[in-house]
Each structure stands twice: as structure tokens, then as C-alpha cells.
Length: 364
Length: 258
Image: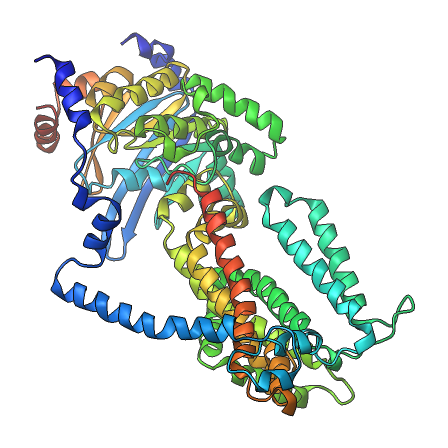
């Protein structure tokens, strides 16, 4: 018996059939022990009860493009509510003949977002592209120049409003949150106190109350004759609110940094700003990507709260369709559609964050 | 002992001081960590500081570039006194290289970026020039082939050599070493010590906190022994190892040289 013989024997032995394949998988994951077997059977029964009837409702008996009358006669889902009202759901009260404009604005925004995903594209030219993009989006929405009819901002609504509130809200809240987190760690007492008070105050109240303040209380303090746009005020409230949460997440990252990193940076002669910008923040922010994205995702969903100050974001426009007598009663379909819209956005965010984490991984 | 020929006795008398510590005290709260420290380090001089843990030796060298603040007395580095003046502190830190026990490389930057960072941002050297300098020093610590890797991909000994090269890129006048080999696996200690010995040969002013007595013997001009926040004994390596004066020194040596 040489070494070769032993090797060939080892190669020819396969794992026992009960441990691999479908049977093996089911055994280890579904039927290991009587309790788990019982739970599996109960779950299977429940799924068997739910899924076929859902499939029948959603796909087999359903209507996709029809009038509301046709829907009334069938037992299935009436998805027709979406295509029939898609323009109102998407654009709200934006003048009907002008709705190409918000559509183009949204496309610009989405294209810019997608292009900015790749970190290799982060150059000066991208900054200019955003400037031009933002300007043309503003122009498209507001009009009044270059022969575009002027549209008052109280007619804005639907998906563009949701996207605008969240994209600008999140991009402004993130740096503000970082600054607040740094301020909370500052050696200067006044700065630290201000940041702590700010963060605790904002976190201590619900977003709804901030939105109310911005729309009802805040105008009382403005000098007479001065008015601030309602969307703008809501936007500020969202930024201030989200920043406080981002600040606390970032603070966690800063506290997780080892003393040695500060010392190494300082011993090279880097000053405070260089130390933070070059050494500490890149590492601390990377460390807290997962919780930061959680905060940003929930902030994105929270923009739907602007309904309470009568802004018509995409949730509100969908709800308004449901109050149309023709489409009353199809709320399940409408909300499932909305859920898919929100989910798509959130899924992209969390996907992107995972990609960033992977790209930034440096073997530590 | 040939290594030490580069600095003769007359030389030492005539060459001027680069670090002066005069009646320096430091407290951590109520705890008196450093008590009445007096030390003059001349240019090109190499000093090894040893002593039991908690004796204040790390704290002492960390005071020299103000990673720790002293409360009484004076520390003068290269003619500049260390006070609360931030500009002066940054200036001194740029002139004084520091190597840490745990390397403290920047894990999010590649090796060559780690090295070029200081020159680019503190000395305002153009990026290309800084990277050339970085490569020169990486050659010097025999690790140029790792330039594009991240610190996390290197062994401890390699990381510490990178850390030494990073300090050298700033062209410091003095190098401080805070237990540079204590966090290393035994087989990696030599590669780091070798780099330090080369550095000594080139005439770098060095203050080294270490328990590597072989290194002290072959490289140091003076050995300082610290205990309970005081410099207890100070002598040439020959005298220090063969004729220690104080009981505590003897006890320490007997423990460490076993």
C-alpha cells in the first residue's frame, strides 16, 4: 500500500446520500427533529391555503388594462387602476399638457444618479453635470423661461416631488449629519453643546411635528410679506430631521476609530481638518455604511409624511385616485403598486451600499 | 561596536542639542507619571530607554511630539519649545518621526499612499515627487514590491517596516520608536531591527523604547533606565549592562536577560 493507493481510496468515497442533494438539504433544514418537522408541515399548509388563491386573484382572474366597469364584474385584481390613472399618480396636479417636463426632469435625475453610482466617474466634470442637471430640472419644473409656461410649485406633485424631497433631503442631510457628529466630538464646549442640544431636540420629536412646525409655526416668525415656499420648508424639515439621525450613526463610527489612527496622523504633522478628511472620516464613514443606509432608507420612506401638510407626493396622489368613485375599493392593488415603487428605490439603495462596501474593502 | 564610530566623544560634546527636556513633570489626574525628567539629546545621538511596564517610558517619548501634554517644565525640540501653540506643535511633529507599537498604518490607503500622504499634505510636495520619495524609502526597507497593496495584506514585520518608511518620508531630524517590536511575532523582530540598525548607521538621531537588549548594546550611545516615572540610571551600554549601579536596574536586567 503506497501513498497513491490511499489517495485514490479517499477520492472515490462520496459523502452519504442523506447529507447532500435535495433530500439532505430538506433533512438538515426542514425536518431536523419533531418540532421543526411539525412547524414545516404547518407552514406548508398555510402556504398552500394562501398562495393559490393569491395567484388566482393577482394573475389569473385579474384585469390589467380595462375600464372600472369591467373590473366590477370579476373576482380578480383590478390592476387597471394603475394604467388608467398613471399620469395623475405620477405627476399629480402638474398641468396635463405640460407633463412631459417633469418626466424629463425625473429622467435627468435618475440618469445622473445611476451615472454617479460608479466611483470612477467621480470627477470634477460630474460636479458640473449635476449643476447643469439641477438647473435644468428646476427650469423644467418651474418654467417661466425660454418659452416654458410657468408652473407654480403648489401644482407639483407625485413621483417627482417624492424623488426631489428624498434625493435632496438625503444628499443634504448626510454632510450636515457628518458635521454635527464631528461637532459633538469637538473640544470646543459651545460647539459640542450646540450639537448635542440640536441632535437630542430633533430626535426627541416625530417628523410629523417638525413638518407641522415648518408649515404652520415657522411662517409666523417670518417678517411680513416674506413667504417661503411650502415644499422648500418641508425639504428643510426633512434635512434637519435626517441629519440628526445620520449624526448619531456617524458618531458611532468615529468612536469606533482606534486612538492610534489619530496619533499616527497627528505625528505626521497633519492638522485637525486633514486628519479628519484624509484619515478618520474615510474609515469611520465606511464602517457605518450599513446603519447609515438604514437611516437613509427610512428617511426616504418618511418623505411620504408630507401628506399631512397637504403636499401631493406619490402616496397622496395614489390615495386621491382611490377616492374617485369609479376606482373606489381597489386600494389593495393601488397600495401593492406603491409598495413596489418604494421597494424598488429602497432595493437600489441597499444594493448600492453593499456594492460600495465591497469596493471599499481593503483586507481589514 | 563599529556602528558607533560615527559619533566620537568630542563630537558629542561639540554637537548641539536637538532635544532638551528640563525639569519636566506630567500627571494623569492625580497620578504622577513623569517626575522631574531631565534629558538632553544631541544630534546623531541614539538613546535606548528601557524599564518595567508602567514606568513612564512610552509617555516620555510621546511627550516629545506632544501626543501627551506635560504640565510642568520645558521640552525644547529643534529650538522650538512645546507649548499650546498649535502651529509649533504641527511643525515639530513634521520634524519628529514616530513609530508605534501597533504600526498604525492607515488601512484604507495603499502602502505608497500611506507614505506619500504626509509629504503631500504637510510639506506640500507634488504628488508625483512624493510617490517617488515613497518608493525610494520602500526600497530602503526592502518592501518596494508591496507598494500597491493595502496594509491589511502585509505581515506585522512588513507593516512595521512600512511605518518606519512612512516616518522617513517626512525627512525627520529625530525618530522616536515606541516599542517597535513588542507586537511582532518572534521571527519578524529581526527584519525590523535590521532596518533600524541601518538607519542608525546613517546617523539618524533616535530615541527607542525597547526591551531588545541586543539592539541597545550594539546601537545605543546611551541607555536610560526608567522606573516609577523617574530616570533611575543613565549610562553607556557597556557600563549599563556590565556594571549597573542601582538595585532596581540589576533586578530588571536579571529578569529581562534570562
